Image (cartoon, rainbow, N blue to C red; front, side, top):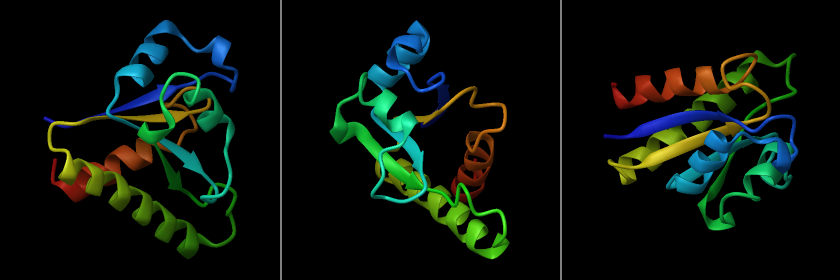
Length: 123
């Protein structure tokens, strides 16, 4: 069974991550982090790297600040979901974490991503 868990990493300070979040980050097969482009290291990724080796961290590009171009934002969402779904296809019993600043269930990309991945995987 595949598992995708949304993990809030607080405000971006590794010392403020909950013990449960730290344990999930340390144990996951892969940790996805949202970025605006593949060249940046965002606050979520910086925090994740405190608990997870860099080789287990995978950047997922979102149009995080693109509020005007709905089509471009939708393409980015679709590509992000396809990236995560492809990882699950290659790791059918894998556990993945999607790390986000703050609560993954409030004003977060996690809910949209999880719904899209479920749709692609037919879950």
